[in-house]
Image (cartoon, rainbow, N blue to C red):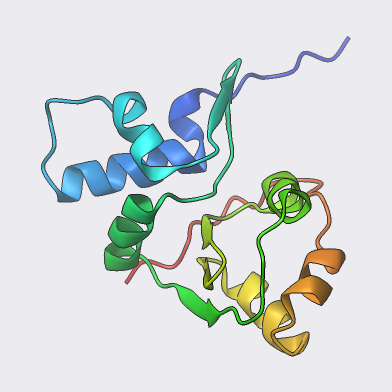
Length: 141
């Protein structure tokens, strides 16, 4: 009989990102879990797993100071519920999206979007649910 090992919340990408920035800003009065909603718009905690890597505007501002990001201007784009759900189900690295811009923190995702002619609709159609989450960290500046 196989036993599934439970990953502590502290090992999640979201927790590690918030903890890193919390240390950089010397914020000791709040726990990582207390300030996580300020960073991630769609984060949920299910058991010992943190789900959701869509950034808030505040989270984006702080992430841009600590990590390499890739900005894409969106023209004639209306953020739909379908797009939000697709991103939530498939993205492994933090991202920010609204009707005017998309900011990625994954070089691989950025390259694929560029190869699709920066056509967000085509890029979204090509996104697939991850089989095994990548264990690498976003590029530190």
